[in-house]
Image (tube, rainbow, N blue to C red):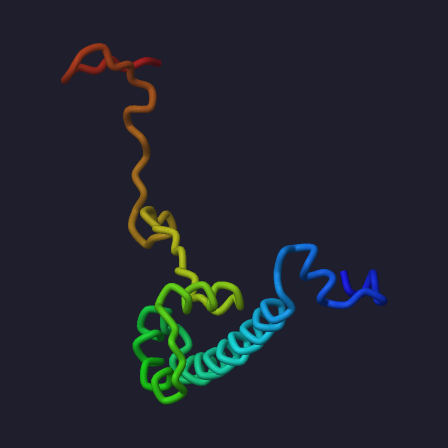
Length: 129
């Protein structure tokens, strides 16, 4: 809104929404503080992923604990999951198709002997020609 109304101050807009100027700036500082911490964590994640590229977020969270404590960053497991997903760093599971039939084998393939038979009752077959 400040771009649309350059002559009005931040205080005017804050009063419109029932907030103080300090609350506005406090919110801006909090966002900046979170973004700096998030960037530090993401850099450490990328450093760990260089040697362990398929390491999942749960194990990554445990490997990050000493780093987080040394930088006095408090981050929960769920926030780390959200952060990784937001930056497309989560590991997707590989979906592999199950192959149940190998038709390209070396063994003899027998012809279908019951193709022209009609089944009328159990244990009995009539040959149709």
